[in-house]
Image (tube, rainbow, N blue to C red; front, side, top):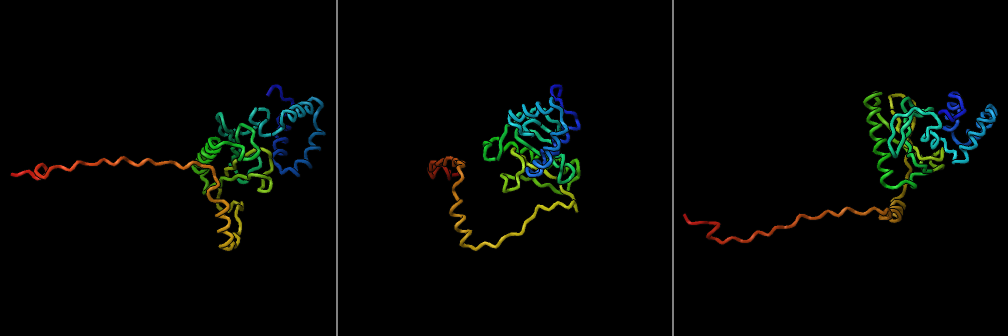
Length: 212
């Protein structure tokens, strides 16, 4: 953009740094900042003062991205450090740190778009599978302060591992977990109205079985 003093190469570097885990960002960012002019530093400080989220800057058009899709609620861009080629990030345009900050309509919409993108990866890239993945919280592997839904095309022998070994859990523990969790989600049950029963009036015998 015309008001962005960063060069295309600097924007690319900043995007790459922003996609790293927080610890690696802290290692690489100081060296990058030393390469900037006072004008460029001032620009980044202003962005930081406005929130500084790199994905919000992408939404605002202040950082370049390879946009695949957008509407009034979400933006879908290619991941510049993909798990596999064609890895897409779907993000809400509204800043949300974790998915719990999104309302039901927003969550439904972002996953609907993710599902359509997964179909696109099957059709266009001849993907043999897809993963739709969310890291919700730092302990779960979230590395940036903005909700991201990853749509990852999968290919035979792509080397990507998203598996785990199931744990042994005693039945008593499962029962305890069931009691703690069941019925806690505030979702209204859909009431299905029964079709009205139409009572037929009994016809007179002579009407039902007329004499011939």
